[in-house]
Length: 159
Image (cartoon, rainbow, N blue to C red; front, side, top):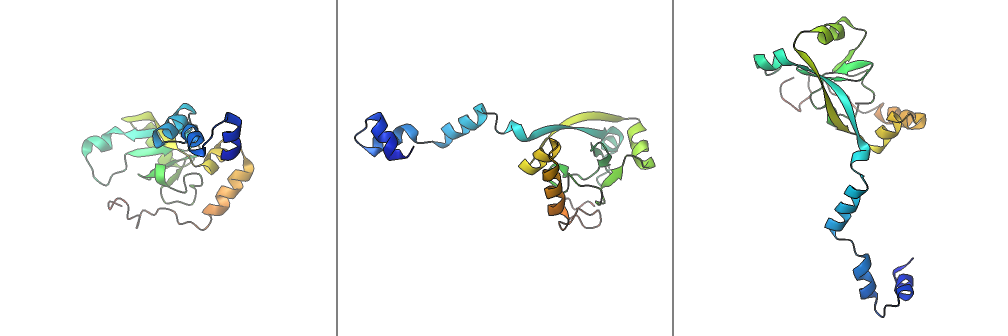
């Protein structure tokens, strides 16, 4: 309904009276989003391998966190912000599970498995839920986007 139709339906004399009932304050809008679980719908839990030995040794440029992608591991420190996190195969930080390096990491003593919540975009969520059109659309968009590089990532100044 338009504001004027609602005004007539409610029997208000002034549109200002009707607006009082339909106005959304930022607090009311945030509460509505929270009650609808809007923010949780795009979160997924993912396995992460943590190398305790690397943390204890305090090596500033050592890799210590590996995101388990199922088909491989990602050692990019800012994985949760990476646009390529759904198409990692051509990235320098990607370690295929079939590789001996991935096997060594998984069997290394001091490695613990943890879960981390990762926010997904709507396209990524559709792809995770099995929408093949969304997967193709996502891969097409990422074809020309540059991947993070160990040689010049620039984000952490450690690579």
